[in-house]
Length: 185
Image 1 (cartoon, rainbow, N blue to C red):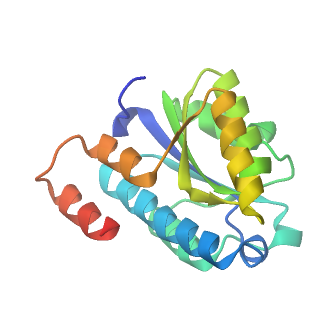
Image 2 (image 1 turned 90 degrees about the vertical axis):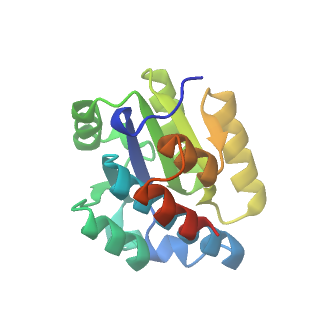
Image 3 (image 1 turned 45 degrees about the vertical axis):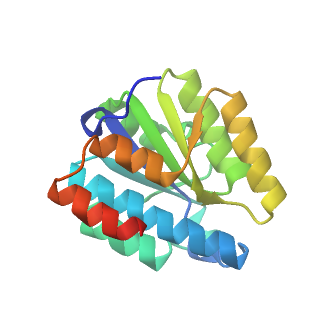
C-alpha cells in the first residue's frame, strides 16, 4: 500500500443529496456530514482535485447544502448521473481519467449501492481506492457495514477520515495541519 499523496489523489463525493440524506439515520447523517467537511477542507487546503456526482437529481434532489456549499467554495459542480457506478457515466469517467489520479478517496451514499459499485469499478480500472468508512452512509447500519465489506473484498482500502487526511498531510507543523487538527477535535 502506497502512502496517499495530495498531488496524486482525487476526492470523489458520491450522491450526498438532500432527499437521500434526509432518510439516513440521524447518527449516520451527522457522521457523514462532519467527516465530509473534514475531507473537503483537507482537499481544498492541500490542492487535492475533487469531483462530485448526483444520482438522478430530479428524484433525489441536489447535493445537500453543507456539502454543496463546500464544493462551491472549491469551484466543483456536481454532475448528474443515472448509473449507480460513477464510472458508468461517460462524462464523469472522462473527467476522472483527465485528472489522472493514482488514488481515489470516496465518500458518500449509499454505501452498499453507489459507493460500493463505484469503488469496485475504480479498483478494476487500476486506481488505489480508499473508502472513507466514517464518511459514508446507508439507510440501515447493516447495509452500510455490508457495503464497506464488499468494497474491501473488491480491493478498496477502508479507512477512517483521520487516517486519510493525516496521510495526505504527512507531518505536523504546517498551517494545513493546524486547520485540519482543529476540525477533527
